[in-house]
Amino acid sequence: MIDMDTRLRVARGIGKSETAASTLVFETLKARSHPTLPPPTVSDGWGGIREAMVEVYGQVPEYQGIGRPPTHKRPVPGWQYLQVVKQRDDHGNLIAIDLRVIFGDEAAVLDLLGKSTAYVERTHLTMRHFNSRLTRKSLAFSKDLEMHCAAATWEDLVYNLARPLKSLRLPETDHPTRRWRSQTPAMAAGLTDHIWSLRQLLFTVPLPIS
Image 1 (cartoon, rainbow, N blue to C red):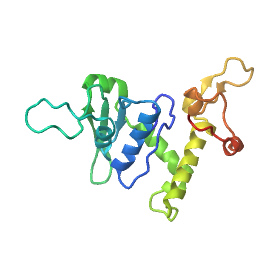
Image 2: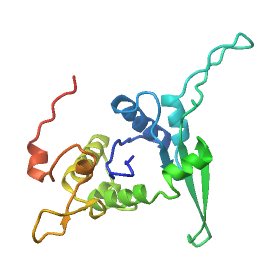
Image 3: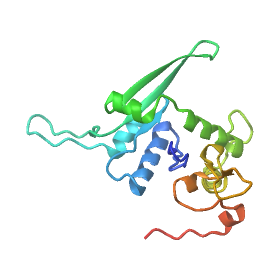
Image 4: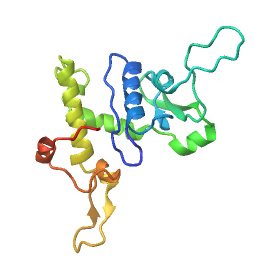
């Protein structure tokens, strides 16, 4: 999952199904920065994001004293989730886009989240370019889950901290010859003030969270 404004990859889930992976993503977000409500989310029509959102953030309704007590979690007011479903013809050409507001007020969700999944699709392409284990239909696929997770974590670190994005650059006002000041997603999110080198990534030991 990425933040649309900063392009920062905020969470990753690796599982045997889309629902399992999405559940890990929301559990990570709940532990880090969204303890009560899931962040506004936009995705394509695949996967089990809706089910994962209910599993992690849903609540069992209070028993009203009539019938059997409820046992299943349900959505909570305040959620915002949009699916952007692409319709294609028999040749794979895009012919239409179907916007489905799963949770939240339709006008508010569309105004906030837009009508595209371009940002996450772009980062998926970047992931496959930098991590051949994610390339489809190749011999580079992972044979070991631990190594697959390690490769994905390393690629996330390089992307967030060491790779400036052209779409995040800012006009340079204090330099006589340089027009733009480069930024990484972590810089845009205010997590660091400089572009990290690979050496710095390898030699930095993160402190445990107390």
